[in-house]
Image 1: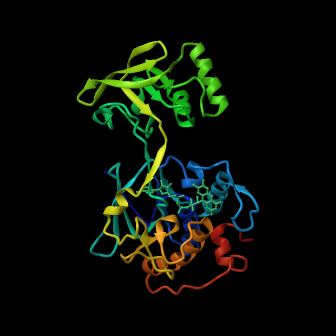
Image 2: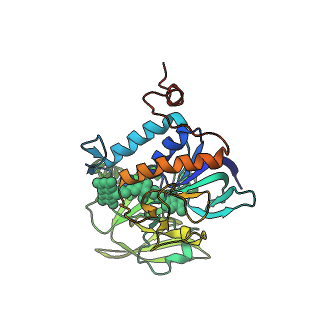
Length: 341
Ligand SMILES: Cc1cc2nc3c(=O)[nH]c(=O)nc-3n(C[C@H](O)[C@H](O)[C@H](O)COP(=O)(O)OP(=O)(O)OC[C@H]3O[C@@H](n4cnc5c(N)ncnc54)[C@H](O)[C@@H]3O)c2cc1C
C-alpha cells in the first residue's frame, strides 16, 4: 500500500481543481490532485474539448482543451502532483484533525485540508448490454487501461467506435498477443487518422477488425476464453482473454455520498465565505457545491477557489498572518511564480 502526505488533497482535476492549485500555491500550500480520468480537464477535456467557450474573462473565445492547457501552464510553477486513473473512494477525518484519503488502487494520502472539486461526480463507464459481463469485470473485462502491461501477451477484444477504442487498438497492438476491434459498422466516430492507421494494420494482418456486436462471453471463474460476435454473416467465436469495451461515460455522484457530508440534491452545501462543507477542513468548489444563487460556471469556480485558499491557509499554517497581495505588485508572489527580475 502506497502512502504519502501533502498539504492539500484536491479531488478532481477539472478546471476548478486546477485553478485551486494556483490560489493555494500563492499561499505556499503544496497540492496533490487525484482524478478518475487519464488526464486533466474534467468535463472540458472529456465532454467538449474542441468547443469554444465564450464566457471566460479576457478570452473572447477559447477552446475547452485550450483553457485546460493554459491552466496547466499557469499552475506549473507550483509543481502539483497528479494521480490519474484513480478514484478517491474513502475520506476520513483523523483525531488530530488531518484527513486520510484512500483510492481504489489502495493508495493512502494524508492531508491537512481536502478540497472536493469533483464536478458532476465520478465519470463512470457505461456497461454494454452483454449477458453476464459483470462476472468478468475487474479480472478479464476492463473499462480503462491503467497499465498497458496488464494486456501483454493477451488475446484482446476491443469494442467501440470512438477515439478511446481506436487509440487503444493502436497502442495495445504491439503489446497484446492479438487484437480484434469490434464495432457495429465500418464507419467510426474517431479521428480519421486513427481509423486509417487501423485499416492499414488490418491490411497487413497486424490486427483484426470485425463488424458486429458482442452477444456472449465464455469462460470460467472470471477468466474469459472467448467472445461471440454477431456479424452480418452470422455468429463468430473469437478466442479472447481480455476485453475492453468503450461505450462512453456517465456521471454519477459515486463514493462522495458515503463520506458523511451533508448533501443537497446530490450536491455539497457550502458557505459563501470559505466554501467549507459541513466538516471543517473539507472544502467543496466548482460544480459539486451548492449555495443560494449558485451558477455552474467555470468563472464561479475560479472565484470560489480564491476565497477557499485563504481559509485553507489558516488550517495548514495556523497563526500565520494572511496578507492580501496583488500578483502585479508583490515581489514575493512573483518569486513564487518564477517571474521576478
Ligand atoms: C457541453 C458543455 C458545455 C459547457 N459550456 C460551458 C461554458 O460555455 N462556460 C462555462 O463556464 N461552463 C460551461 N460548461 C460547464 C463547465 O464545464 C463546468 O462548470 C466545469 O467543468 C466545472 O468544473 P469542475 O472542475 O468543478 O468539475 P469537472 O469539470 O466536472 O471536473 C471534476 C473532475 O472530478 C473528477 N472526480 C469526480 N469524483 C471523483 C472521485 N471520487 N475521485 C477522483 N476524481 C473524481 C472527475 O473525473 C472530473 O474530472 C459546459 C459543460 C458542458 C458539458
